[in-house]
Image (cartoon, rainbow, N blue to C red; front, top):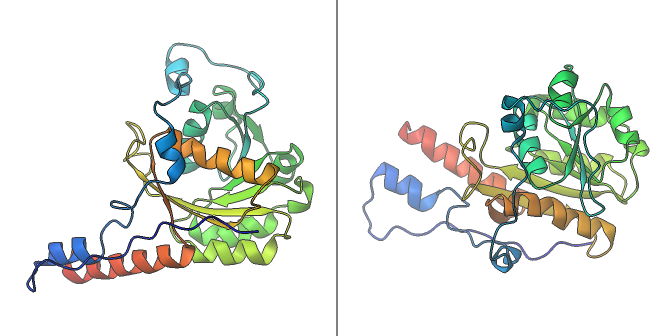
Length: 263
């Protein structure tokens, strides 16, 4: 199993020997997605597909759907989200806009919220896993991630399931998932570098970093991975493939410079 070559973004050198602190930050530790090339498949899409109606707009219009909603098409993914707080709900919106089904579980009861949005809510992670999601997306906090992951009954999932995370650090979830998951499961570590506030008007141009840590090169798992990544791609995200190690190195350097100059 292997992933495709990664797009790396290396720091650029200042054009002069003297630079202000903000310039130093921008040149040496920029937003490490801002100047990265798009993943090749983006260029193949000449136009974005028609979007499904916004769930919140439907709710505002009084269309509160009860139950599981319409069944997805054969090509649609079933994405299970573990941790359905603000960020999980935010990501679910994009998944649904692209025509995929969302399943969710969380410590809190979001069954009412989900019922009005065509999302299947499960009281336990075990029940969600038994429902057979194609992708299991972990949306927990950094501090709770290890406990959450170790509590997931992965044995209840189908063997070709793709496991993904959205943490802002990447080597930690990568190592944790490699330790816990049997080889048959695919792993893709992602960092959507935006959230409910910065992405409230759309995701176009916003950076999405990902690393295909362990994904089959062909077969159902490979197809599922491409479908999952295409959700963010079709929403307009700037897709940057970068190793977890490289991501954390750039992030740490950027934070260090930022704190040093007091920004």
